[in-house]
Length: 105
Length: 173
Image 1: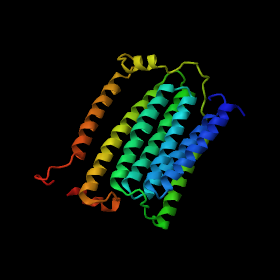
Image 2 (image 1 turned 45 degrees about the vertical axis):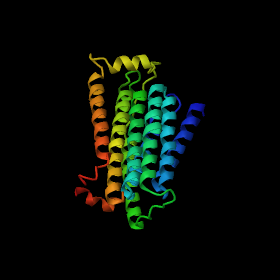
Image 3 (image 1 turned 180 degrees about the vertical axis):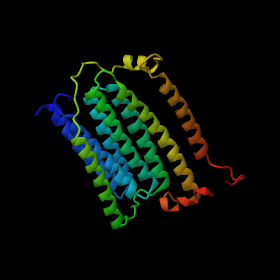
Image 4 (image 1 turned 60 degrees about the vertical axis):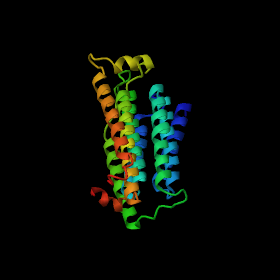
């Protein structure tokens, strides 16, 4: 892939993916869809790490390991976030951001 | 055009289209399924650059774990046929402008920077190398972040269980 696709094309794709995630995060009001947008952003950043590693520093595997750690952190974050959503739904019967101000009670 | 380039541009368009659908669809379960396809496309990209272990981790953790968790939480908190309410059109336009401005800023910076791609060394990320580097405490080893991630995952697991645990009716929390 390194010989046939210039790095700038891959970076353009990841930029577009990241800002699609930003757009979703700002427009959505349901907490689960906001979590989906955050996962999209994390995913775009992961691709960036892998591509920089593979094109600019081949054989060092630094971006590879950072991507592995980001995936682990994303899994932990999603688990805690979904636990919070389920508890919130039990208490206020809604996971809309407009109603989450009740969370302090 | 070489086959690798054709596969890459196909994957890229599939990922962009499914990401767009995931953030714009009004049916919440479909958003999760579109996310699944976008993440699967990323795994295919990792296979293309030769990082087979990372692609497998992406498939197992993201597609097998996070998306399934999201689908379960959707089923627990909303009805299948429920449609999300339409957001305010003014807000949509403003957000689209912000996202486009961010995209063009990043693309402008990218266009003004020249990246010097190195020739591939042929080094592969096989599981033996990855395992040795993850537990290597010398220069270039990753044992410290590895241990920190272990503790983080343990803390997240305990935290998720404690938060999602149903309170007993007596303490009425």
